[in-house]
Image 1 (cartoon, rainbow, N blue to C red):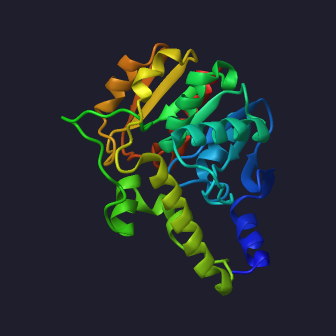
Image 2 (cartoon, rainbow, N blue to C red):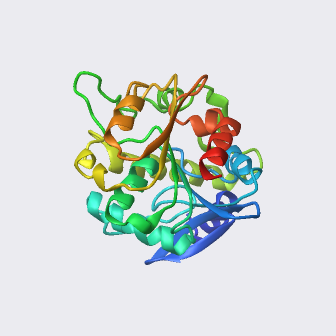
Length: 272
């Protein structure tokens, strides 16, 4: 892969990039108004996806950085363990300009938001968290989305598999010489997500949740095939400042992709 084609593909998914360590992070910016942040889930930020537009339509400027290794961002060296990832996420919210702002975060991004909030109370304002990873119950385990085929993983992530097309399918306007590179970026995104949650997405977060002082609104897809919807009650009991919970019909693990308008409405109410 040439440096030129890599830059072009990054630009296809992240209209803006910011320098980060020895590489860059992708940043999607949408809308005008008070700033809210968005931390992506396992699907990353495949361009300006619908939930970002729906959040912007509520009268906000949405800033959505991509974590290292996810689509739009380069891989960062030195991410050896969860502590390294937390430090990186803390740096990235500063660079992206979302420190102290209200936040919508999904899946692995929601887990990282909680980890950062536990050690840095000023990191975020009110948070809307969609199906966070981080808790574990042996009697009601979280499913492994990586020990399977790509097509099965796709069906596990969203109830409507068409809503993840920007990630799993090659865009029709993508030049032929970049199709292979898109596949590589897809692989790297999945690898980065796996680094955070495989083999078990349990890194002791439960013991740190008492430090999360932010008002939290919890959202869970009723048809989540990765984290059972019963975890909505577990999170509500574990966090000290939960202001609302929502079980979203016709939504899988990434309810922000399945039901973007509903997630935006929930966020607008939480941030009012």
